Length: 269
Image (cartoon, rainbow, N blue to C red):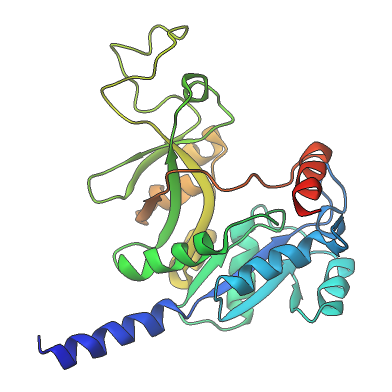
């Protein structure tokens, strides 16, 4: 390839990489923290902080997808865009698919799912999710994982594990310890990490090609998805390839509880 052609190709890739949509699912009715998106952090509602993270990531368009008019009104008050969606969606992916359909996004458009309770999310990670999808055209989705460093985390069912192939694609997600190290994991009280393999913790941020998103959400939940209570298994079940980017350190934890909220408030003060 001539240098001029290579430069043009690189510039095209940069333009493509910079073009992605971020949709922020935000429900009002959290069981543990009702009204969570509207709770105050440093004089601003939480949803405004999340929206700003998406803007800082370089999103072409940012839309809050919600089932509550109070959230729509709050987003409008700070100049953002929100869209009312069905209250009956079983997952955030279904809410994303409704928005993508209503916006008439092309099947090859890229949508990043940024949860509405992630006010401390690193914008670089949001951008990386889209970039990884551009760099791996065979994938319909991208997500992230980080090495597990504490042995107790391997056996914690609330920490989702992922096994990855040599090309960086997900083979399986589970709440169980995977891959199972036969020579080591029989002894759960051992203090050291296995030295034969690196287990990975799944980080629940996703980017989708719109065509893949629509195809996934058009299918009924599958048996392994229901057994593990992990919606990403539906994509694998139906043959959608998921590229998994590795990050050395997990991003800041989202806000699930009152304690999480106070921690974020103290950091933002």
